[in-house]
Amino acid sequence: MVRIGAVFPQTEIGDNPDDISLWARAVERAGYRHIVAYDHVLGAGTDTRPDWTGYTVDTPFHEVFVLLGYLAAFTTVTELVTGVLVLPQRQTALVAKQAAQVDVLSRGRLRLGVGVGWNAVEYGALGESFTDRGRRSEEQVELLRALWSRPQVTFEGRWHHVDNAGIKPRPVRGSIPVWFGGQAEATLRRIARLGDGWFPQSPPDDDTRRTLERLDRYLAQAGRQRSHIGVEARLSLSRVAPSERLAFAEGWARLGATHLTVDTMGLGLRTAAEHVAALEEALATIGPIAAG
Image 1: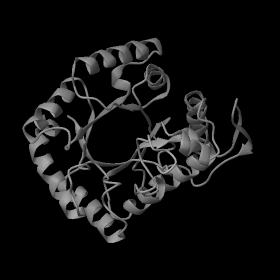
Image 2: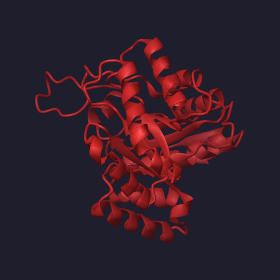
Image 3: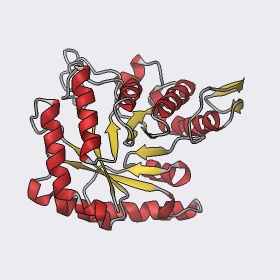
Image 4: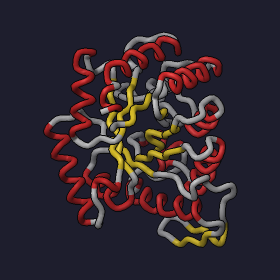
């Protein structure tokens, strides 16, 4: 059985809180099991970067922790997911506090997806190093889990120093699942050692099968196996034709995906209601993988 979720249409839904709450209620009512929200803090100005590709100052992005805290008030059972939070450009203790707060407000429904990002402009503006972000993220996850699970923490790492301090409130379940995004080999090794799950961004083809085989080897080296982690694929409706969507979902189910998330951005939709309608149509198509 595959759990099916919906991507929050960050760049297209607009700034009206009523549209955001309408979307969240409708997604839960339609039967989606989780909501995934992307994370970016800053967009780059293109007037001084003519060759820039990626998010710009004109791209709207709701701050992910505030957003999920807001969505917690309009949903009751839907899991709330960062997919993914750019962890190394944020202060670790603050992330621990913010994530725990969202988990408390949602009564234990937060899943924290993290990644190392690609936007050096954003890192520079936030005062964090871009070059060592992968290695720092591993220490960050270690510290996050300590702060979530213990009332008092003393931590001495390469980048982090905590002298007998803690956060309160702490997560409802005593911790929060941490999933990783990314395709690099270092990321696969990181997932095998530290992760509760993985967000691949690829179709269910032979290349992806080989990547999963490598992940399985890394998991074995870490004394773990695939059943110890989740795998969440992404179905972007703008990239997969309607006639191919069920096959895409079934392909990922055969590869062992535990979750699949539907993204409606890029279809030219103009309103929250149109995004909801697209999600309802998609769920009617791929729903059999959730029941099979």
